[in-house]
Length: 237
Ligand code: UDP
Image: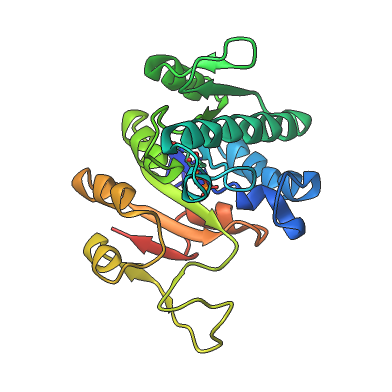
């Protein structure tokens, strides 16, 4: 417990992170692989809150581009995040962790409502808090929800798990000469429009001096490196 750099973290995972090789829906093997990393971090005494996206199931912006009313499409996107949250809860509980899903849209048969003080209490008791339904408002994203919850829950950092090793100057999947940044400022991210989190989320983090670490969630041991202060991925501060 002594060598923890971050005692309370907010882990943001995109819906894509749950989809695995299929690229859509929920792949149980992929989910259980990253859940093992979470179990290791929790065993070290890290208090974990999570925000999960919904892009593997439904993205409001894409549906509205094809003619759907944006707010309705966004509510569908938020419902998708609840499905993902319940899937991650199930996987974490199979691995022995105690968890709670807290939704920004009340759905009492499925999960608890998001109440900040209750979320903090769960964290203090060592439960993994999975925040579902984003901010509860259309026209936002789960990146912004992650920044908001990180601040509300007094997390020390936002950790964004991706499929690549951090933030690059160009897409590393398309360009073999892409360079990984070790450290960036919030303004670097905003000015260069780097793909870290959307600009609303980055601005919120900047205004509240909340560091963001972007790292590869699928590299075993990586989450452990981040929470113990070893170099992994890119830090934005
Ligand atoms: N969404 C929303 N308000 C929020 C968070 C999410 O309306 O506060 C909707 C929005 O339509 C978004 C969808 O939920 O496209 C899924 O979230 P997101 O795209 O952030 O998921 P990710 O890209 O992380 O998988």
